[in-house]
Amino acid sequence: MTVVAPDVVGALLQSAVMAALPLMTAGLGELVSERAGVLNLGVEGTMLAGAATGFVVVAATNNLWLGMLAGMAVGLVLSAIFGLCTLTLYTSQIPTGMAITAFGMGLSAYVGKSVPAQPIQSTTTVHIPFVSDLPVLGKALFSLPVFAYIAFALCAATWWLVNKSRAGLKLRSVGDSPVVAHQLGFAVTKIRYGAVLFGGAMSGLAGAYYCAGYVLLWQENMVAGRGWMAIALVMFAGWRPVRLALGAILFGAITAAQFQAQTLGIEVPSQLLTAFPYIATIAVLTYISSRKNSALDLPKSLGRTFHPLISKLV
Image 1 (cartoon, helix red, strand yellow):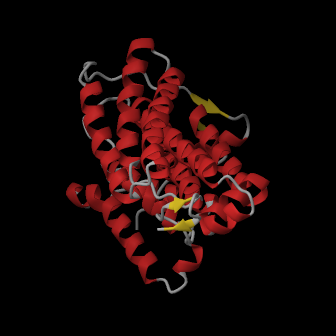
Image 2 (tube, helix red, strand yellow; image 1 turned 60 degrees about the horizontal axis):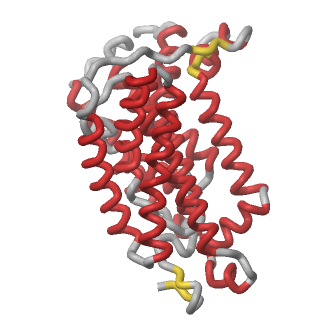
C-alpha cells in the first residue's frame, strides 16, 4: 500500500483551494442575486468577458489588480444590461441570461484576439508566519496568493450580509415575497438591481482572476463551463455562503485531481479526469432534484418577474 507524503497531500489541498477561488467568487455573486429572486444564467458569459478583459489589461499594464478591476467593470456593464432587460423591461430572466452568456462569449473572443496568447507573470504567494509551516493545512490555507484571502473575506462578508444585517433581511424578503416586501415599503426593484450588479461584478472578477491570476494564459472559451458550475454550487449549498465555499473547494479538489493524479500514483485515463468536474456537476444537480426538502431552501420568487405597478409576480 502506497503511503502519500504530507507534502503531496498539502500540495493537493492547495491546488484544490486555488481551483476553487473563481468558482467561489462567482458563486457568491450568484447567491446574492438569487437570494433577491433573480436567476442570472449569464455567469458563464460574464466570466469569459471578465477573463478576456482582465488578461488584456494585465498584459498591457503588468498589474493584476487593474486587470481584476477591469473584469469587475465588464461584469457590472453586462449585469446592468441584464438588469435593464429583466427588471425594467420585464423580459424573462432565463432567456435573457442565456443571451448574456452568448454575448459574453462573442465579446471575449473579440477582445482576446487583441493580445498575443503568451503567458503572463504569476502572482506572489503570501506565507503567513508560523501557521504556514504546519503540516498539510499550512500550505493549503496559509500559503496562498493575496486574492485567496480576499475571496475568503468576501465569503465571510457575504454570510454576514445575508444572515445578520438589515440589508440581508430585506434581500431575503424580496427573494421570498416581493409583493409583501413592496407593501412594506421596500424598494424591490432597487434591491434586485443591487443584487444583480453585485453578482455581475463578482462573476467578472472571478473570470479575470481565473485567466490572469490562475491559468496565466488566455484561450478562447477557457472558462469551460465553470460559470454553470458556480450556478450549480449555489443550489448545492442551499443558498448559504459557507456551504458554497466548502462546495467550491470540493469541486476544486475534483479539478485539481486532473493534475495531481500521476503524483499520487493513480492511473486513470486523462479523458475521464477531464470529465470529472462536469460529471460532478450533473451528480450535484441530480442530488438536489431528488431531495424532498430542496424546495424549502429555494427563494420563493426565484426567476419570476415582479411588476411594482400592479404588485404581483408573473
